[in-house]
Amino acid sequence: MNTRTSAAEILDAVLDGGSYASWDRTPLDVSPGPEYAADLAHAREKSGIDESVLTGQGLIDGRPVAIIACEFAFLAGSIGVAAAERIVTAIERATAEELPLIASPTSGGTRMQEGTLAFVQMVKIAGAVTLHKEAGLPYLVYLRNPTTGGVFASWGSLAHVTFAEPGALIGFLGPRVYQALYDKPFPDGVQTAENLYHHGVIDGVVPVGNLRHLMVRALRVVSGDTETPRDLDPAPAVADIPDRSAWYSVEASRRADRPGVRQLLEHAATEQVPLSGTGQGESDTTILLSLCRFRGISCVVFGNDRSSHSVTATMGPGALREARRGMKLAEELGIPLVLVIDTFGAALSKEAEEGGLAPEIARCISDLVTVDTPTVSVLLGQGTGGGALALLPADRTLCAQNAWLAPLPPEGASAIVHRDTTHAPEMAEAQGIRSIDLLREGIVDAIVPEYPDAAEEPVEFSMRVAGAIARELAGAQRGHGGDRVARRMDRYRHLGLRDHR
Image (cartoon, rainbow, N blue to C red; front, side, top):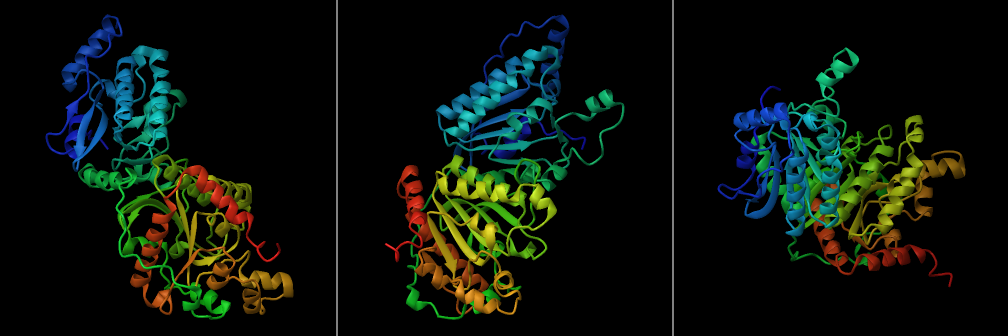
C-alpha cells in the first residue's frame, strides 16, 4: 500500500463538518542541532503543520470527542519529546473533560534524531492512556499505513477497540530495519492489517470512507448510552413450561437449524460492532465477541457460535482468553456483559492441554464471579462441561426452554456409569439437566419459552431472548460492584443446601 491518508483527511472523514477545534500550542523547543533543525523546517514545509501529530476536539454525530491524528508527511510521523508532550496533554485534557478519545496513529516509531529520550516518551503516553481508560472513558484506535515501532508497541495497541486501514503495514519492527539487521527481507504478508485481523491482534479492517459510520456505532455502545426498555414480557412461571423429557431438550438443542448467538445478534441487536480475538495474537472461530445494544441497553456480548462449533471444533484456551477480554472490556467501559452458552464442551486435544485449557476455565470462572459490571448469562442450547461452566456465573441467568446444562454430554455420562452410550436418555433425566430442573434448583432465574421449538421460529425466538436479556439487564444494573459480587457469591454458596438445613 503506497497511499498515505493525511491527518487532515482523517479529521474530515470522521468528524462532523466544521466541528474540529485544535488544542495544539507551539511545540516545545527541543534545542535541535543545525542538521535536525533543518529536518524540522523541511518537515513543516512539506506537511504544512508544525509537528507530527494534531490534537483537538470535535463532534461525531453530535457527540463531543477528543481526537489525536499522526501526520506521516512530518518526519514519517515519528514521535519525539514535543509530539509526545502534545499527545499526553491531549489525553489528560480528554480525561479531565470526560471525553471519549479517538487516536489514529501512522508512524515509523520514535524519532531517531532525539534518540533514547524520544524512545522513553512512549512510557508516559501509555500511562496517560491507561489512566484515561481507568476513568471509565472509551479509547478507540484506527491504525493507518504504516504504523510500526514504539508507537504500535504502546498507545497504538492499548485501545478498547482497534481497527486499521486496508492493506496497511502494521508491525513492531519495520521491514527496512529488519532487512538492515538481518540482511534478508521480512516474510511477505505478515505485517499487514488483514493478517493481524486474521490472528486476532486487531478487531477489523475498515476503509477510511466507512470509518465515521463505524465510530458512530461504536461510540453509542462504548459510551454507555442507555434507554429504559419498555414493554418487556415478564418471566414465565415454571408451570407454563411444558414438562417434556430431558432427552427431548437434548435432541432439540442439537438441531442444525436451531438459532444461535449469530442469529440473536442479527435479528434482535442494534449498533453491532464485531470484535476479533484476544488482542494478543489468538482468535477462535468457535466463538463470537461483539459490542451491541439490546432494547436500548449497551453491552458486550460473548458467546459460542454454533454455526462453526462441532464435536471436533470446540472451545479452546484461546476462546476463553477472548471471553476474559470481553469481561475486562465491559468492566473498563462500565457497560453490562452478556454471555451466551451453546457448546458441546471445551476442546479435548493435545493443543488445548498444552495451551492451558483447565487454568483458563478456572480464570474465567474467577473473573466472571468478581467482575465489577452487571452480567447476564444465557443458556441458549447445549451447555456441556467446563466450557459452559466458565460462562455461567452471572447476576442473572436465563435458559431457553430446550437448553440444558450438564457436566458431560449425556452419552459421556452414560459411558462412565453404564459403560455404554445407550443409557444417555436415562442419564439426562437423572442428572436434572432440563431448563425446568435448573430453574427449580435456582441455577437459572428464568426460562425463555419456545413455541414449540426455537428452530421453528428463529426470528421470534431471538426477539424473545433479546427482550429477556434487556429485562434482566435492567434489574442487574441496580446496586454497586461490591453488592453484585456479594450476591453472586451468596447465590452459589447456597445452591443445593436448602433441603439440607
